[in-house]
Image 1 (tube, rainbow, N blue to C red):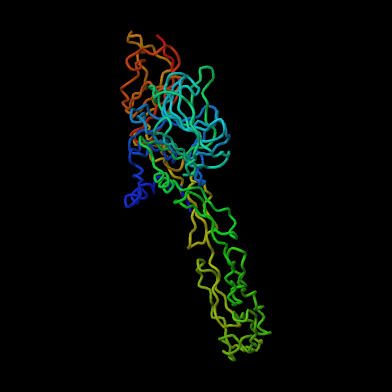
Image 2: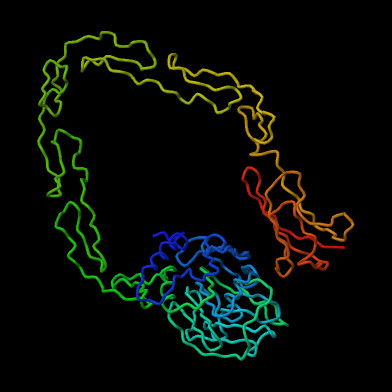
Length: 542
């Protein structure tokens, strides 16, 4: 079954089913869901809160093999940031879940999610792989860089393996009140760390990286991540089980049907073995459909016996037929005589002509002098006119429209040359529908819209108040829909606008930014609906 799109298309229906559960303590999974990235081709937020991510990672296959349905992180410089929003930096309790597939089981390549990305300091809630290769959940107090004195952590018990998909979740209520789940099983674990209360900075959340060390660069996740969710409440064990119904588990079957079909049990969150199948007695005793055999798993259809070509087309030895009941050829003797209907001694019961036909007829002059239906001739054996084969168009046109279209004349049975086409004057003078020109044979439209131009972006500006190059933005004489983002070299968002007329003045939150190189990214929508994007660097000078 093709599961492409399952994550987004089935979610509403599955969540609706949870409304009818009685006697369970599970809440609706959308309750307090602040962020949900299905990662189906992009990093857009499907929670309804509009917290779309900014992806700097590569789309890849998900756990079902669907293309462009998860993200791959190269362990060097790839990540996804989410907005610096108060709703994404709540007080405890907090829950986070995701599907992961590690290239390397390492603490340095295993930072999965952090809802706060400061530099050289530990803050926010973190889900990662521990130094012992197990799932870990933490919260940090924002007082210093790294170490147990600045965080509270719980480390699970399952030894994770590279190259395997896992569903992981952390539920953090307090310093010694945390739950870790691997494939929806509570992973137990031990607590460590002596940090204070949860604290945040004014930085965005991030997927796939962490930078909390003064003397080392940021650590980046290496592997695949899919289906990231973030709640500002504590999920229950029933919630985790229901989450597995929304995020179907990996295939349990080992591919060997002889030991039964292994299936995923949402109640226990584990694979359950099936009963090995037994031979039901496959062959139905009908030779026409072949011999059905048991392969240890299922009945295999036999190769149906078909007519091997019994008749040899020689009527002198009779007519051979295929018998589907006995699956064999049998023969009917032939009757000999004159088989020509116009002969004087025609025998309608004869199968094979024995050459004894007698005729008494003359050629009446068969040909009608019409070449289109061929040359008609007299058959002295059948005493009848026989039609000739009508000539057909040999393919008159040489494919060169400049010398006209050569066509077949059915009356003369010859090719006739057409007249070469002339330029009718193609361009209508309206650039909005493109530039029409004559290619020697037909009018060709060169562009959907020749009136619009791609906006340009300067590589430097000087916001010093002298009225010259004081702002940075698109330079264009055409009306476009345009969105513009400005980042510093660490990826921090400094400016964003969807108004093409609003440009960056070199400040952030009312303070002038320092001299240096900044990164911009722009999305342009032309009036014909075509979309383009541009990214580059701009140098701020004063």
